[in-house]
Every structure is written in structure tokens, then in C-alpha cells.
Image (cartoon, rainbow, N blue to C red; front, side):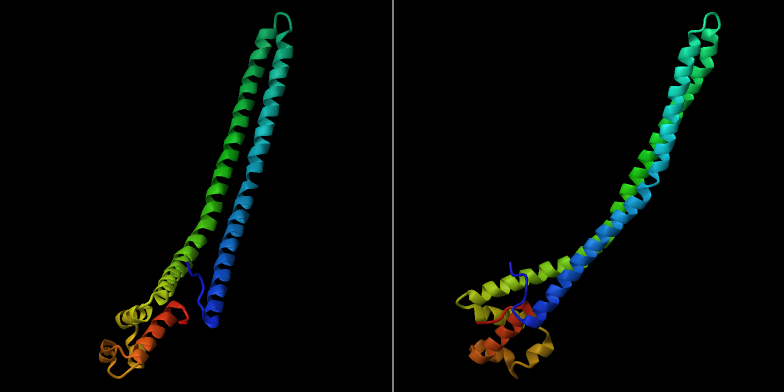
Amino acid sequence: MKLYADFPARRNLQILADVIAIGCILVAIWCGTLVYGAIAVLAAFGQSIEDAGTSFEQTMADAGEVLGGVPLIGPGIRQPFDAASGAGGQLAAAGQAQQDLMMTIATALGIVTAAIPILLVLAVWLRRRLRWARRATEGRNLAALPDGLDLLALRALAGSDYRDLRGVAHELVDAWRRGDEKVVRALAQLESREAGVRLR
């Protein structure tokens, strides 16, 4: 597949456009990473809540265990500590849920932040580049055929702008039908120039 034109000015513009497009994609990825990092920081609050809940749960469970061993009154005293330990577990679970939520939001927003500009760049730049590369490859392959000039001339007649065709010859179609070599070559050059291919 032919990626760049044979003509220096057009080739330089294509290279510049490719560099800009790739740069935009890299910037979009960087922005997505920044958004992810900024939101993921909020998960630290959930980690603090989870740590506090786990610590409280363990402290209450240990206190209940110690006081539960006191003769006669142990079982009665242990019950509130067990209930408090359960509350600490719920607090730890809430902290974990908050972390999971923040990480999910961070991932989703990071991907969306990067994906939207990338998709726009691909829709505008990549589609045009692939269409051009396909046309240039076809033009190069046609030019290599024994009757390539005639085929390129025919394509120019079918698809070139009227103003470009008018400058080739006064009675263009008649000259092409007669096989006028000068007109056929001029038409072929017109098509090959549009395809970015230099005729040999």
C-alpha cells in the first residue's frame, strides 16, 4: 500500500498531518490518564473508612472476647461489643464499596475522555488517509500496466474536475478517442497527480 505521495510538497503535508494526528491521539490518552488519576485519588477516602471500620471491628471484637470471659456477667457484657463489632464491619464494607465506585467512575471517565478525541481524529484523519492510500496504490498499479496510460486517462475523463479537463485540450473526448498520445498522457498525468503518483 502506498502511504505517501511521490510529490515532495504533498508528501510533506501528509507527514505533517500524520504527526499532528498521532500527537492528538497521544494527548487524548494523556488527558484520559490525568482524569483517571484525579478521580482515583478519591478512593483514598474509602480506604480510610475501610481501615477505620476494620480497626473498630477488631477492637470491639477483642474487647467483647476479653469481657465475655468474666464470670457471671461476661455473656451480658459481651453482647453490645459484638453488636458494635458488626457496625464496624458494615463501616468497612461501606468504605470498600466507595473505593469500588470511585475506581469504576475513574476508569469510565478516563476511557471516555481519551476515546472521544481519538475517535474524532480517526474519523477525520484515518478515513481520509486510507481512502487516499487506496487511490494512490490503484494509480501506481494502473501506471505499471502495459495500457496503464489509457486506463489512467479514462479515469481522469470519468472523475476529474471540469476545469482541469478543460485545460488539457479543446476537443478532449475526440482527441482521446483518436488515441492522441499527447492528450492521453496529459489525462493520465492529471489522474496520477491526483493519486499522488509520478508517471515514469
